[in-house]
Image 1 (cartoon, one colour):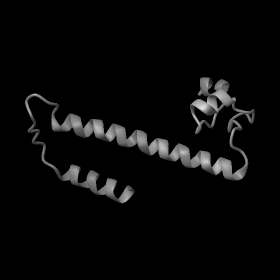
Image 2 (image 1 turned 60 degrees about the horizontal axis):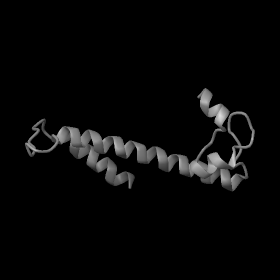
Image 3 (image 1 turned 90 degrees about the vertical axis):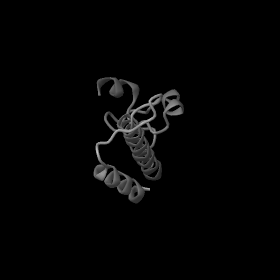
Image 4 (image 1 turned 120 degrees about the vertical axis):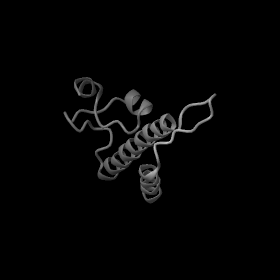
Amino acid sequence: MTGSLADVREARSDASADDEHDPEGPTLSSEWSRIAGVTDELERSVAATGAALERLATGTFGTCIRCGQQIGFGRLDARPSAALCIACARMA
C-alpha cells in the first residue's frame, strides 16, 4: 500500500498546475486535497490500530499509556484503538 501511495504522490507532484475540470464539479486540486486528507486519516487509523494490536500482544491493551489507569469499557467499545483514558484524552 505504501509503495502505491508514494507513486501517486510522486505523479501528483509532477503534474502541471492545469486545473481542468467539469464546470459542474470540484476542481482537480480540491479533489487531490480531499484525497490527501482522507489518505492521511487512514494512515493515522492504521498506525493507531497497529499500536493497539501491539498493546494487546504485550498485555497492556486497555491501560492508559499516560497515567496507567484502566481505560473504560465504553471508551474501548467506541474507539478500540484508544491509548488514553478519558481524563488523559481531555488533557491532551
